Image 1 (tube, rainbow, N blue to C red):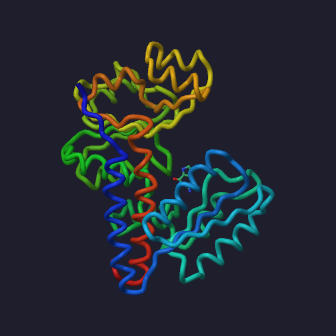
Image 2 (cartoon, protein in one colour; image 1 turned 90 degrees about the vertical axis):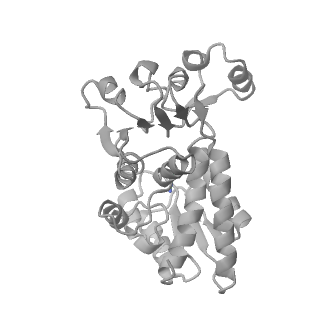
Length: 305
Ligand code: GUN
Protein backbone atom coordinates (compact mmCIF):
# COMPACT_ATOMS: atom_id res chain seq x y z
CA UNK A 1 0.00 0.00 0.00
CA UNK A 2 1.39 3.45 -0.86
CA UNK A 3 2.15 5.83 1.96
CA UNK A 4 -0.26 8.77 2.24
CA UNK A 5 1.54 12.07 2.92
CA UNK A 6 -0.78 13.91 5.29
CA UNK A 7 -0.44 17.62 4.59
CA UNK A 8 -2.63 18.67 7.51
CA UNK A 9 -0.30 17.06 10.07
CA UNK A 10 2.79 18.61 8.46
CA UNK A 11 1.09 22.03 8.23
CA UNK A 12 0.13 21.81 11.92
CA UNK A 13 3.78 21.19 12.88
CA UNK A 14 4.92 24.21 10.83
CA UNK A 15 2.20 26.42 12.33
CA UNK A 16 3.29 25.33 15.81
CA UNK A 17 6.88 26.38 15.00
CA UNK A 18 5.66 29.71 13.61
CA UNK A 19 3.60 30.29 16.78
CA UNK A 20 6.76 29.83 18.86
CA UNK A 21 8.67 32.27 16.66
CA UNK A 22 5.84 34.81 16.98
CA UNK A 23 6.06 34.46 20.78
CA UNK A 24 9.82 35.01 20.73
CA UNK A 25 9.37 38.13 18.56
CA UNK A 26 6.64 39.44 20.89
CA UNK A 27 9.22 39.39 23.70
CA UNK A 28 11.21 41.87 21.56
CA UNK A 29 8.14 44.03 20.96
CA UNK A 30 7.66 42.82 17.37
CA UNK A 31 4.35 41.54 15.97
CA UNK A 32 4.52 40.34 12.36
CA UNK A 33 1.63 41.69 10.29
CA UNK A 34 -0.01 40.53 7.06
CA UNK A 35 -2.23 42.66 4.82
CA UNK A 36 -4.54 40.69 2.53
CA UNK A 37 -6.13 42.47 -0.42
CA UNK A 38 -9.29 40.75 -1.64
CA UNK A 39 -11.01 42.36 -4.61
CA UNK A 40 -14.73 41.79 -5.25
CA UNK A 41 -16.58 38.59 -4.45
CA UNK A 42 -14.92 35.55 -6.07
CA UNK A 43 -16.22 32.71 -3.85
CA UNK A 44 -13.01 30.61 -3.88
CA UNK A 45 -10.86 33.69 -3.16
CA UNK A 46 -13.15 34.68 -0.28
CA UNK A 47 -12.75 31.23 1.28
CA UNK A 48 -8.94 31.24 0.86
CA UNK A 49 -8.48 34.75 2.23
CA UNK A 50 -10.79 34.17 5.18
CA UNK A 51 -8.72 31.12 6.05
CA UNK A 52 -5.46 33.11 5.75
CA UNK A 53 -6.72 35.89 8.04
CA UNK A 54 -8.07 33.37 10.55
CA UNK A 55 -4.75 31.51 10.63
CA UNK A 56 -2.94 34.79 11.40
CA UNK A 57 -5.18 35.19 14.46
CA UNK A 58 -4.56 31.60 15.57
CA UNK A 59 -0.78 32.02 15.36
CA UNK A 60 -0.65 35.49 16.93
CA UNK A 61 0.13 37.54 13.81
CA UNK A 62 -1.52 40.88 13.13
CA UNK A 63 -3.65 40.90 10.00
CA UNK A 64 -5.70 43.38 8.06
CA UNK A 65 -8.16 42.64 5.29
CA UNK A 66 -8.64 45.22 2.56
CA UNK A 67 -11.63 44.65 0.26
CA UNK A 68 -11.82 46.96 -2.75
CA UNK A 69 -14.93 46.58 -4.97
CA UNK A 70 -14.64 44.63 -8.25
CA UNK A 71 -14.79 47.96 -10.12
CA UNK A 72 -11.42 49.01 -8.66
CA UNK A 73 -8.89 50.48 -11.11
CA UNK A 74 -5.18 49.67 -11.47
CA UNK A 75 -4.34 53.18 -10.17
CA UNK A 76 -6.47 52.69 -7.05
CA UNK A 77 -4.86 49.30 -6.43
CA UNK A 78 -1.38 50.81 -6.89
CA UNK A 79 -2.28 53.43 -4.25
CA UNK A 80 -3.36 50.68 -1.82
CA UNK A 81 -0.11 48.78 -2.37
CA UNK A 82 2.02 51.94 -2.01
CA UNK A 83 0.36 52.70 1.35
CA UNK A 84 0.99 49.13 2.56
CA UNK A 85 4.62 49.28 1.42
CA UNK A 86 5.07 52.35 3.64
CA UNK A 87 3.46 50.93 6.78
CA UNK A 88 5.82 49.69 9.47
CA UNK A 89 3.20 47.39 11.06
CA UNK A 90 2.78 45.45 7.79
CA UNK A 91 5.45 42.86 6.98
CA UNK A 92 3.63 40.90 4.30
CA UNK A 93 1.35 41.98 1.45
CA UNK A 94 -0.86 39.42 -0.22
CA UNK A 95 -2.92 40.31 -3.28
CA UNK A 96 -5.35 37.46 -3.81
CA UNK A 97 -5.49 36.34 -7.44
CA UNK A 98 -7.24 36.33 -9.85
CA UNK A 99 -7.96 40.07 -10.16
CA UNK A 100 -10.74 41.60 -12.32
CA UNK A 101 -9.67 41.97 -15.95
CA UNK A 102 -9.43 45.79 -15.89
CA UNK A 103 -6.63 45.54 -13.29
CA UNK A 104 -3.06 45.13 -14.58
CA UNK A 105 -2.00 42.17 -12.42
CA UNK A 106 1.67 42.26 -13.42
CA UNK A 107 2.00 45.99 -12.71
CA UNK A 108 0.49 45.40 -9.31
CA UNK A 109 2.64 42.43 -8.35
CA UNK A 110 5.70 44.42 -9.45
CA UNK A 111 4.63 47.29 -7.16
CA UNK A 112 4.75 45.18 -3.98
CA UNK A 113 7.97 45.82 -2.09
CA UNK A 114 10.09 42.65 -2.59
CA UNK A 115 10.78 42.68 1.16
CA UNK A 116 7.02 42.34 1.83
CA UNK A 117 6.28 39.95 -1.04
CA UNK A 118 5.19 36.95 1.05
CA UNK A 119 3.70 35.21 -2.02
CA UNK A 120 7.13 35.28 -3.67
CA UNK A 121 5.59 36.54 -6.94
CA UNK A 122 7.82 39.61 -7.47
CA UNK A 123 10.45 39.20 -10.23
CA UNK A 124 13.14 40.25 -7.75
CA UNK A 125 12.24 37.30 -5.52
CA UNK A 126 11.98 34.95 -8.52
CA UNK A 127 15.46 36.11 -9.56
CA UNK A 128 16.89 35.79 -6.06
CA UNK A 129 15.43 32.29 -5.81
CA UNK A 130 17.02 31.17 -9.05
CA UNK A 131 20.34 32.80 -8.12
CA UNK A 132 20.37 30.85 -4.86
CA UNK A 133 20.17 34.00 -2.69
CA UNK A 134 17.94 34.34 0.37
CA UNK A 135 14.45 34.98 -1.01
CA UNK A 136 10.80 34.74 -0.11
CA UNK A 137 9.79 31.64 -2.10
CA UNK A 138 6.23 31.07 -3.35
CA UNK A 139 4.18 29.28 -0.68
CA UNK A 140 2.94 26.20 -2.52
CA UNK A 141 6.36 25.24 -3.93
CA UNK A 142 7.97 25.82 -0.52
CA UNK A 143 5.26 23.58 0.96
CA UNK A 144 6.11 20.78 -1.48
CA UNK A 145 9.71 20.79 -0.24
CA UNK A 146 8.54 20.75 3.39
CA UNK A 147 6.34 17.70 2.70
CA UNK A 148 9.25 15.78 1.15
CA UNK A 149 11.76 16.76 3.86
CA UNK A 150 9.49 16.24 6.84
CA UNK A 151 8.41 12.85 5.46
CA UNK A 152 12.11 11.89 5.20
CA UNK A 153 11.78 11.28 1.47
CA UNK A 154 15.12 11.73 -0.28
CA UNK A 155 15.48 14.58 -2.81
CA UNK A 156 19.22 14.66 -3.48
CA UNK A 157 20.13 12.62 -6.55
CA UNK A 158 16.48 11.78 -7.28
CA UNK A 159 15.00 12.46 -10.70
CA UNK A 160 12.23 15.00 -10.11
CA UNK A 161 9.84 15.59 -13.02
CA UNK A 162 7.64 18.68 -12.80
CA UNK A 163 4.62 18.75 -15.11
CA UNK A 164 3.60 22.40 -15.56
CA UNK A 165 5.70 25.53 -15.97
CA UNK A 166 3.68 28.28 -14.29
CA UNK A 167 5.46 31.17 -12.57
CA UNK A 168 3.54 30.39 -9.38
CA UNK A 169 4.19 26.64 -9.05
CA UNK A 170 6.04 24.81 -11.86
CA UNK A 171 9.09 27.04 -12.28
CA UNK A 172 9.71 27.79 -8.59
CA UNK A 173 9.18 24.19 -7.43
CA UNK A 174 11.67 23.04 -10.09
CA UNK A 175 14.20 25.58 -8.78
CA UNK A 176 13.68 24.54 -5.15
CA UNK A 177 14.11 20.85 -6.08
CA UNK A 178 17.29 21.72 -7.98
CA UNK A 179 18.65 23.54 -4.91
CA UNK A 180 18.03 20.29 -2.98
CA UNK A 181 20.23 18.49 -5.55
CA UNK A 182 17.49 16.70 -7.47
CA UNK A 183 17.95 16.12 -11.20
CA UNK A 184 15.04 18.17 -12.51
CA UNK A 185 13.03 17.93 -15.72
CA UNK A 186 10.25 20.41 -16.46
CA UNK A 187 7.51 19.23 -18.83
CA UNK A 188 4.68 21.16 -20.44
CA UNK A 189 2.04 21.00 -23.16
CA UNK A 190 4.63 20.81 -25.96
CA UNK A 191 6.68 18.00 -24.37
CA UNK A 192 7.02 15.03 -26.74
CA UNK A 193 5.98 11.62 -25.34
CA UNK A 194 5.18 13.02 -21.90
CA UNK A 195 4.52 9.56 -20.44
CA UNK A 196 8.04 8.41 -21.31
CA UNK A 197 9.45 11.34 -19.32
CA UNK A 198 7.10 11.06 -16.33
CA UNK A 199 7.81 7.30 -16.10
CA UNK A 200 11.43 8.20 -15.32
CA UNK A 201 10.40 10.25 -12.27
CA UNK A 202 11.33 9.25 -8.73
CA UNK A 203 9.44 12.37 -7.65
CA UNK A 204 6.58 13.46 -9.93
CA UNK A 205 5.07 16.90 -9.30
CA UNK A 206 1.76 17.49 -11.10
CA UNK A 207 0.92 21.18 -11.47
CA UNK A 208 -0.98 21.50 -14.74
CA UNK A 209 -4.48 22.37 -13.57
CA UNK A 210 -6.19 19.55 -15.49
CA UNK A 211 -8.30 17.01 -13.63
CA UNK A 212 -6.74 13.55 -13.37
CA UNK A 213 -4.23 14.31 -16.13
CA UNK A 214 -1.53 11.96 -14.81
CA UNK A 215 -2.76 8.47 -15.70
CA UNK A 216 -1.50 5.25 -14.05
CA UNK A 217 0.67 4.24 -17.04
CA UNK A 218 2.58 7.55 -16.73
CA UNK A 219 3.87 6.64 -13.26
CA UNK A 220 6.89 4.51 -12.31
CA UNK A 221 5.98 1.94 -9.65
CA UNK A 222 7.07 3.20 -6.22
CA UNK A 223 7.45 6.87 -7.25
CA UNK A 224 6.54 9.77 -4.97
CA UNK A 225 3.54 11.64 -6.40
CA UNK A 226 3.02 15.26 -5.40
CA UNK A 227 -0.34 16.48 -6.65
CA UNK A 228 -0.68 20.28 -6.67
CA UNK A 229 -3.96 20.30 -8.63
CA UNK A 230 -7.30 21.45 -7.24
CA UNK A 231 -10.06 20.82 -9.80
CA UNK A 232 -13.74 20.93 -8.96
CA UNK A 233 -15.94 18.26 -10.57
CA UNK A 234 -19.60 19.19 -10.90
CA UNK A 235 -21.07 16.80 -13.50
CA UNK A 236 -21.98 13.15 -13.07
CA UNK A 237 -19.94 12.25 -16.13
CA UNK A 238 -16.77 13.85 -14.73
CA UNK A 239 -17.39 12.29 -11.35
CA UNK A 240 -17.73 8.80 -12.80
CA UNK A 241 -14.53 9.20 -14.82
CA UNK A 242 -12.55 9.38 -11.58
CA UNK A 243 -14.58 8.07 -8.68
CA UNK A 244 -17.12 5.51 -10.00
CA UNK A 245 -17.66 2.91 -7.25
CA UNK A 246 -16.04 5.02 -4.48
CA UNK A 247 -18.77 5.07 -1.81
CA UNK A 248 -17.21 7.80 0.34
CA UNK A 249 -16.80 10.18 -2.59
CA UNK A 250 -20.25 9.27 -3.83
CA UNK A 251 -21.80 10.37 -0.54
CA UNK A 252 -19.86 13.66 -0.55
CA UNK A 253 -20.79 14.34 -4.18
CA UNK A 254 -24.48 13.63 -3.47
CA UNK A 255 -24.41 16.01 -0.50
CA UNK A 256 -22.51 18.94 -2.06
CA UNK A 257 -23.11 18.48 -5.76
CA UNK A 258 -19.36 18.65 -6.41
CA UNK A 259 -16.06 17.11 -5.38
CA UNK A 260 -12.39 17.92 -5.82
CA UNK A 261 -9.87 15.95 -7.86
CA UNK A 262 -6.19 16.76 -8.32
CA UNK A 263 -4.05 16.62 -11.47
CA UNK A 264 -3.30 12.95 -10.75
CA UNK A 265 -5.86 10.29 -11.63
CA UNK A 266 -6.89 8.52 -8.38
CA UNK A 267 -5.93 5.15 -9.97
CA UNK A 268 -2.38 6.43 -10.52
CA UNK A 269 -1.88 6.85 -6.76
CA UNK A 270 -2.12 3.06 -6.44
CA UNK A 271 1.23 2.73 -8.27
CA UNK A 272 3.00 5.22 -6.00
CA UNK A 273 5.35 4.57 -3.10
CA UNK A 274 4.01 7.73 -1.45
CA UNK A 275 1.57 10.42 -2.52
CA UNK A 276 -0.19 13.60 -1.44
CA UNK A 277 -3.98 13.18 -1.52
CA UNK A 278 -6.39 15.82 -2.83
CA UNK A 279 -7.74 17.36 -0.73
CA UNK A 280 -5.48 17.22 2.34
CA UNK A 281 -2.03 16.95 0.74
CA UNK A 282 -0.28 20.04 -0.60
CA UNK A 283 -3.23 22.39 0.04
CA UNK A 284 -2.81 22.81 3.82
CA UNK A 285 0.87 23.71 3.36
CA UNK A 286 0.13 26.83 1.32
CA UNK A 287 -1.28 28.79 4.27
CA UNK A 288 1.32 27.39 6.70
CA UNK A 289 4.12 28.61 4.40
CA UNK A 290 2.42 32.01 4.03
CA UNK A 291 2.57 32.38 7.82
CA UNK A 292 6.19 31.23 7.83
CA UNK A 293 7.05 33.71 5.04
CA UNK A 294 5.35 36.57 6.91
CA UNK A 295 7.41 35.92 10.05
CA UNK A 296 10.54 35.60 7.93
CA UNK A 297 9.76 38.89 6.16
CA UNK A 298 9.29 40.57 9.56
CA UNK A 299 12.70 39.31 10.67
CA UNK A 300 14.51 40.10 7.41
CA UNK A 301 13.18 43.65 7.33
CA UNK A 302 14.68 44.15 10.82
CA UNK A 303 17.97 42.40 10.03
CA UNK A 304 17.10 39.46 12.32
CA UNK A 305 17.05 36.60 9.77
N1 GUN B 1 -4.84 32.55 -5.82
C1 GUN B 1 -4.73 31.21 -5.84
N2 GUN B 1 -3.64 30.82 -5.14
C2 GUN B 1 -3.06 31.95 -4.69
C3 GUN B 1 -1.90 32.21 -3.89
O1 GUN B 1 -1.16 31.32 -3.47
N3 GUN B 1 -1.65 33.52 -3.63
C4 GUN B 1 -2.43 34.51 -4.09
N4 GUN B 1 -2.09 35.75 -3.78
N5 GUN B 1 -3.50 34.30 -4.83
C5 GUN B 1 -3.81 33.03 -5.11
